[in-house]
Image (cartoon, rainbow, N blue to C red; front, side, top):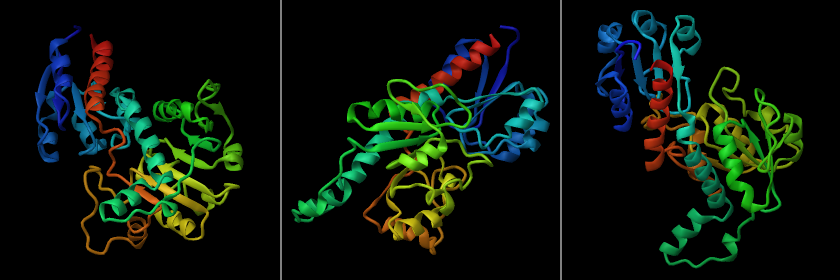
Length: 317
């Protein structure tokens, strides 16, 4: 160890993360209930910071953290860290998308199967004494073209799981090239617009991707499409999604994330007057909704922490 590094945990994590860091010689202070004011008071004493999504790490915190060498995000997205400013100050930023890629790939597939086979509707009907077969006739994934936008850990995991369904899987990634393999064929965005039946989103939330899927974007697709979003809620403009569902351009949607989520991703705004677009979604049988749990399995809970610990240990020991 170059020196003993002190690490502050300001959110809950699996116990394997502090355990692995401690075993590697780090000093870990686990304070998941700490408030932002207290963080400002003590952050200058720490070399490392472990977060999830509860608190935004902005310039104010980074400027006070005079000893800070790294920020570790237990998860995939880094949108709650001012990464550019942190790196300017010599602070390394780590995340662990390898930890929940399998969970996201399985969830995306499960949501698609649920949507195509009317599983939620049919289950409700059977529980209420209704045996309706024709009204629940489903669709097959086989023969469809699945268009993936964002071919990183999550997009790749989804493509891998689609292989046995004999769909055509194509992908576009603005920042990645030459990734065609047995699971996917690399395409341009224009080719996705031309051929896609099922659109699956696997991009981070950035200034570039915020409300990327809007009315204009949706109507660039040649076919009527289904949309799966297991990425971030604000990648999709909900009002435009609903507008295009009403006219049949979007045939159905599987949404694990919503633009109405709070920063912590742990609840929806509790206002009585929920947005009209959200009310449409919750009353539509062609919509499958889950509360941002695509990467939220018992296995990923462990893997997210372990991958992050391994990266930090490799860098600083």
